[in-house]
Length: 448
Image (spheres, rainbow, N blue to C red):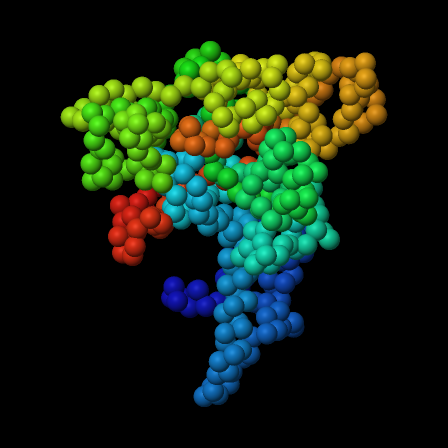
């Protein structure tokens, strides 16, 4: 039997697809799905049921129905792409500059879900190819909700990984200001005013929160400290990755830096402004390599790193910096020490450290939490002096350290919010330029 005949043999084809299907069921961990083998057997061998009922089978010489052919192609695309999106890869666009100069605004990339293991949909009733909105309406229904479950991946999240995750504060969205952080606005302006001005609000399940991408700087069980902008993990200075940048006050002799030099450095023009009163740039974001280049320019007089000390510069008041209380006296550049919660570990609870963990207890692990007038803490109605965490947590920071709303501003990222890791950039465009100059050709098919 030739190779071509072998591939056309019904029993061989059935065996091939059955083995793939069994492997998928084992990975899924739900063996009720093995009944699907009956469908595979009937589709290839007995042919008692027309499973693809929408597909027309043409007699030899019969004219094809274009509309039915298009319907067949669309149904196949929906099923195939949805399967790939759920279990393997998903397209993602970088919406902001928080990860420059590692990931640029306008980068289109594929997010690998295999690395950390794909999450099964918790809200399965969703319009295909959408995440949470279609037009101005929600693209999903919460009539069916399932518990969180993650399939086996290649490994766990590590320090230094770029991670795509569901934005923790994205559980509540203001209809008139969907891009703003509801919780932050409530702290600074008051809940009643915020809802009256920007409401009503929409509540989203965990898997329908907006996607963010940051770098994981600390994993569960680590102790993090940021001192004068430098990150320390478990008392050891953390590696500074090539794309990490912070802002500097760059003073010149009175003349701006040549625009061509700025473009060659790869600086984001939208984040750069010239202050003729300085004269210079009050907040120029630079990586280590950019810093050396700028210091060597003929018209640059001095370069000084911008470091926030307590009290922090506006708008980073204590109401903006996690855990949102003056008792900790933290800033974006001097933060911690902070222990990252770990699954199964028990901590003592006090009124003083409760701000660190109250959102975990109430919103991520779904307990009721109250504090009595005498300072007693009640979880699910019972007085509690300790708490045991049900899952791991992570601390995320953007590589653009002074232009990133990250864990310093909203706290920990739960394990069940992790989506995947950026794998490859397939397109990159610059919104500040016209076509074709807006296309960043050097970033095509770049491995992240």
